[in-house]
Length: 454
Image (tube, rainbow, N blue to C red; front, top):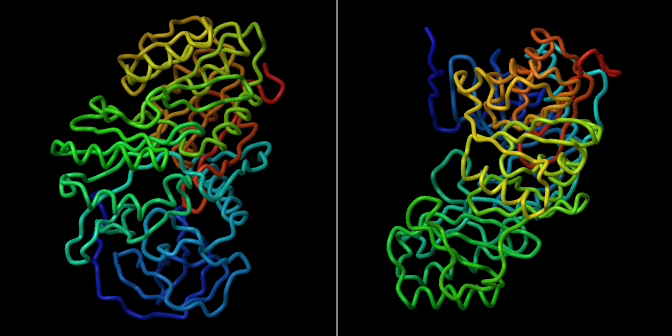
């Protein structure tokens, strides 16, 4: 019978010593305790630790470090004062260079064990800023009467409570350094108890905070928001219902500014709305796009296909290099904004279609027709792209670049592309999109007929 493992919470029990022999995909250390695996938050490979065990299943236990008996050379002091509680990060105790190498090993292990494939070459990891890098986020808000204060930030690990902190080290400084000030601002609003979250969107030129409001703010509330926004260069928006209802408050700071991130190598600015999917790490996104273009290596006469194209993050750079690019996305609003971005940059060679790439009926025949493509780029969500792989192979593309935010589904799909559809995995590597977390962003190149093409 299937089903999820029963997890039993228990009063913390001191255990150990435990030797940490491996790292889990989420950044926890793995050891053996009384013949049973235990996943240990805060432990690193090679360490010997004492553990507070606090969860139990039939197959494994869980806990956290209570004492380090023998430390790894990769261990560092976390920068964030709330790190022990906050669920926003899980690896601040590990040197950033060691983090990305551990993520590279996660990718390679997944490709080997799930996909039964190995890349011909491992790409050097792409790295960028490790502090203040996060430009998109959703922050929780709550008035805690017992503490007589408002909290703004990420939730605690495995808890609905909000981590108490004055600042966040991974958020862009324009927001991360002001969490305490934002909490004080919200504490003075009449709608303090009906404001559960803040959507954060930051670009080089503009900081937008979207307040999810369940009640109408008063005139005094709006004046407080306007004054704070002017003083701190923040444009406040209000969202009363769904994401489409979000709009700047009357008299907001910088009313002539709109959200747009840049891809300077291609002279492109991508306009977006606060709730649209964009990469949280703009500096790394630039490196990722450049690497994807180098791997795809299009010829000016090529026809290219970009699946799960979103706003056109890859489509527009592809259009700078090729005769024609077709971008396909399931969200009609994103497609509309992608078309607007292409029109603003005078890129008629970029054409966009709306289609559900998880619906087999929508792919038979594929919305882009039966005509072949020279290259394909895939950037699916965590669930991967299995449903569309047959249609990708049918394009006859000589190169397929797969950008992934989940190494397990990339490995699963790599197995199909290689063992079912006959492509070869010629390169794969990781990108440090989310430093200090267990999140692994990666890219893989598949080629038809091997490195030199058919």
